[in-house]
Amino acid sequence: MTTQNLIKKAQFENGTMFETDQDMLYVLQLNGSWFEMGKQYGQLSKEHMEAMYQRIVQPEFDNGLISQQEAFELFGARVLSTLSLRRKQYFMGVAEGLDWPLEKVIVLDQSGPMAIYLGKLHSFSGCSSMASWGDNTVDGHTIVGRNMDWNELFLDFPIYTTVYNPTDGSNGFVNVSWPGWQWMVTGFNDKGVYTDLHDGTSMGGNIVSIEKPSFLNSVVDYMTESDTATALSSRFQAARTDIASIWMLADEQGEACAYENTMQENRLRVSDKGAQSFVTVNTFLNPDWGLGMRETQSFSLKRFENLNARHAEQAGGIDAQAMRDIFDLPLYDEEGNFKENGGVTKPTNQDVDLTNYQVVTDLNELQLWVKLPALGGDTDWAHIDVRALFSNK
Image (cartoon, rainbow, N blue to C red; front, side, top):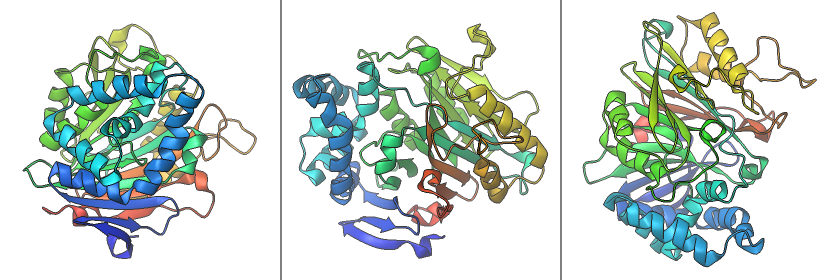
């Protein structure tokens, strides 16, 4: 599928929502100031954001885990006060577009960290990413594959591929996420700089530091201001996070690394000398931690092994199609055992999570493919020409 096959579903001012050939996958193209783009997002996502709020946030209040007032103060007003002006203006626009209190918008955005804070979330679970470049790829391009693995609950909500085109001179970027989760989850900017989030709580603890700003939102700022992975990496070096997390960074120039973050520090993990591929999973792999190689409930080390092995088999011939083929391979066979010569994908929950969505990108061409494997055998990779949706390309 290309952008020519996108079907306009709705428009508000300079923002447009498109349907795709894949059920539950939408594309949003937003244009203007940060406030204007926020207002467009709010208007276009009203139905889906309300459904997310009622399923994800409201039960926390109904079950007495936290009161609405406390949530609005701790994960609404507190977070708002520490955001950049860019993010404040954006969320103000979202609130106006939705006709919601501003705190409600931000509480939905922060409902993942809030669930960690309440001690009831199995983290961001078992994500897997791989970057390949240089001699490993057909044209020397940087090709990235990524699985976002989490909870069956999220199968009830659509996936948004949201393209932001700011008019203040910032980088445009695309983010693949659920409605209302507007921090940086999976995506790249118009300079070909990529990042994605992995769970770090299995290594760094199920803790939220409420004394720190929302690092998830800070990464949005970094992406709008960083033209290379090296520049983005420098921003990570100068920050501390409020939740334990792992981030993979890559760019079109063939740079890739990961940050393994705890409350106290961010540690950089780089590729082996001379390597032209890099794999990230949700366990700390930097030996400086002194933890050794530690398996997780979602079998991070097995996924790490599988991705490296499958990449080695196709090294020199990796392109976007080959990367999609690798990420189509399941982790388990039909009997629930690890599949021989398997991959990392889990269309159903056979351990502690499943694969909610998958992404493959060509960072040099600014192309994106998205797949929702848990929807069944009829689902396919949707090709989205992000370059055509960036207003400055």
